[in-house]
Length: 146
Image 1: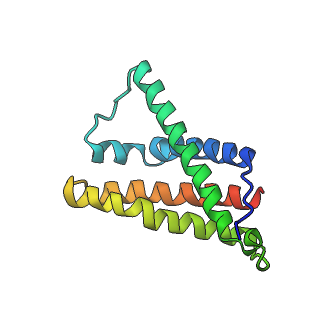
Image 2: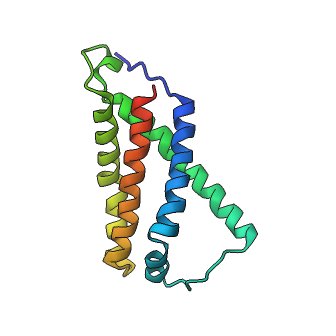
């Protein structure tokens, strides 16, 4: 039996937008200064316009891939997708998909950067915190807007 998975492209788009807004706030007014310091960048650093466009394009592309895969993954957890039972409340699927994606696919590489690249635990906490919040936000949008 194959799952009957439907991807809501508007929810994916909303997730991408929410991730961009969260990134702007997280690495801007909320934790921008400590992040810059931990990365070793000057406090007044501004990328060149061409570099900024490239960075934004890459971030939007990465956010799209994350939202699409998260949408698919959280729907696979629903018994109704497999036609074998009833579902739990939608928010639970968003929470679990976001958390397990974070702990299994985001945290291990960031631990590697602490272990082998000599990145600080503070930088780890800033980045890991961002990804946890981002995946939870995206997970809720995708789980509740089907």
